[in-house]
Length: 553
Image 1: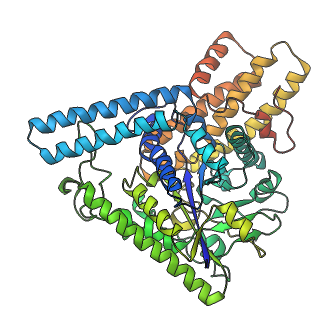
Image 2: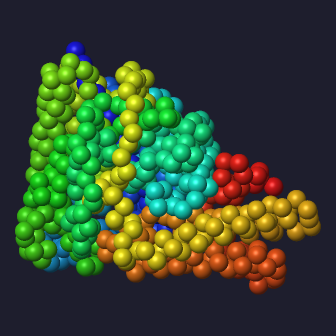
């Protein structure tokens, strides 16, 4: 008899990389995720469905990622990427053979076969269309797909309600276009949440757009300290955040957000740490493939973690068979832990509990190569459990609707549980520019909509300029740029991309403000349209907020 539920939530987001660099930062971020995570994940789901070993789970794609997964240019480049990977592996096979490095040659064959399998699956099983493949799984009730904010903007730090609305409304529209139905649940970027004021806030917008649920980190519900699982990724730690007192709420139960009737589910701390902890999480096991050391010629990773205390140059050679054995052991451990936690909660309270386990999907396969095998064995193991139901978020809420209201605390799932990762001494200047752009976008939208209504002669050109300005404003708001700056993962790239979108917006906005559309302006517009081609059907009127004019002129 089931005494609880397991809700797996795989969140997927990548910034807009189209024609914005290749390697190490740029388009290859998307191609790596497609080859190492999304396509293998689809194959795993097919495997589990064929064996009747899967309940249902939840996966989310941000609109800006969906756009790239459907872009003909990106798909052509992805085919080229796969061919290059296979060719590089073949070259390594020959190179290691000539050097009598037989173990490395075996690993090179492993990578060649892996990428050949991905290429075959992509074209033959999924017809070169990943969005349609995930849509079919949702239509068949296997998965639930979450919506997201347009460019994954960090909503608590935006200055205007109209900006929050434009991010969420465009996300709603893009979802409906791609999946043929309106969304039910949404992933708020970085689980960022701020309590609403009397007349505004994300809660009101979610309610207006018809969303039924969203997700927060544990401390938004329970109070207390956040779980810092990203601390090894940053060079400095935030100032101490005011920690809320522990509260009589638990992430083992769903709640309704006060004043909105939207359900909220909180991340389970224990299971999150078991996967994410930099000190004792599964991916740090010495048998797993070491992500950070790469062959200087081909770029493949031929080494294992060995130990987190070992210098990168001293890593030992990777053994796939040993790594898979550990993945199975870790999956069994995780299944037992989920059962034990739910049994304990049921025994203490007499209630059906839920463990909500949200992860960045790119962790599995890309960062933690064996993570997809771990995920397959985990889902298969839980499907056999007599105690646990494996359900998507919406299916869980249908079976176990919440009946208690909650006032959520300000929070995120970033370091320190607050806004530090995105707003700090290194990024303050970025937020000033974003806020200036928010105000200017509102002003020019109102001006141009009125101008278009009065004059019809070159209205289409003005609309094109305004739509591209809206794209640049949205891309500027992406949470990725301050994240890359703060974590030092790619600071120069993050700052450059931010400034590119800022300058593009300013030039387009200046032309609209001056109402001077010269041949040079038209040429510049065409150039930028060919680069930042995201959201072809963008409705710029959303920048006026919910009460905005119709922008589909």
